[in-house]
Image (cartoon, rainbow, N blue to C red; front, side):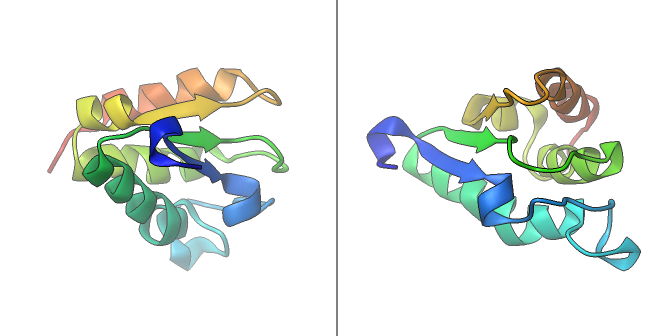
Length: 112
């Protein structure tokens, strides 16, 4: 997508249809891996360009809470809850409650 429309990231298409545990040590497709390899760089790009990043959560087999906290809480610990929520937008038609869950993890995180 162009900058005017914001950036777009599909977890299922750009990462995995089977997101895994919290950390790389715990298994494949972890929240830590998603944060470091996909979400973090895409977030940084959106922030640099002054645009939003739409996170499409649909198309996976589900999410462990530890994956979501590691990825999105981890992002907030790197930047700040406010900055993350200013840049990120979410789409979750499959499981709409995930959006509030992720926002809670972001708000509960604090920069270290």
